[in-house]
Image 1: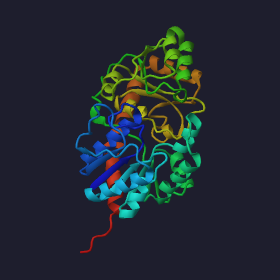
Image 2: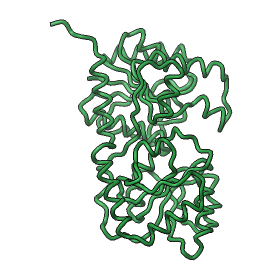
Image 3: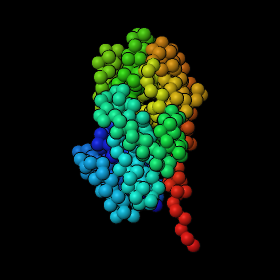
Image 4: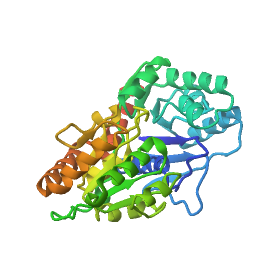
Length: 360
């Protein structure tokens, strides 16, 4: 099966280091491992950005209008003999839906966030009426919408999506070596240091723990860096994704507390990477977390509650056997259900069902 993977978001370059770029590369590579011929169609490419293994890359024009992009995309899909278009939903474009509709090929849309609402809340949303109209066009015309969490699935249905499935994020387990059975009580936080990730909650937690606080490694950068450093954290700054497994292997407890007002639709990449690394996870109980890990797989805390986070960390520091037990359960959970190879097989299964019948 020949799969074209469209990422029309200029802010997600091929080879980029942020979570969205990692997601695109991992899904593309997993589709190739699953036996598909994959052509990745990004709008932008990072300096020194390399194609995922087994994937052909064919950049699209970064500055084309949406109509011109649809024409160019239709032309390339026809030339490639594309069987299915798989698209990461992006703001201000329906080029994928237009091109797939003209060619009569299946169109699967991956939905990672309610981008219109998110942009309006956290950034500046240009042309909001057009953005909302195009979102409805794409989601309502897609053959399947693959949402990373239950709240996002509900969002897609409310905007006209007819066939929606929850397909959470995942991890490439092969990147994470079998963890050591003896690990010191060291905590780690991975990701952008932005308020909704619970950066202030972690900083306040460490102030409350005082001399009881275990070492804290923070892998990432952002506005919350100063608060974490003031609380005693070692902050690496942004690092290439290739370094993440080795850094997580130095810890035994992974933190994902989130803020009290954090959106519930997140499907955190860090959660799956903590689990793959065999860390005992302490996570804010947002829907996207509860859908993946139960109370026997991780320590759940109310989002934005530094006292609850401190209690959970204190308990895990004092109980090495529970740390080891949660770490082992988490890695086994990922191996059984939450690798990118699992996701790729499901995507290709859905795409295969949508293929037109071939006469005998």
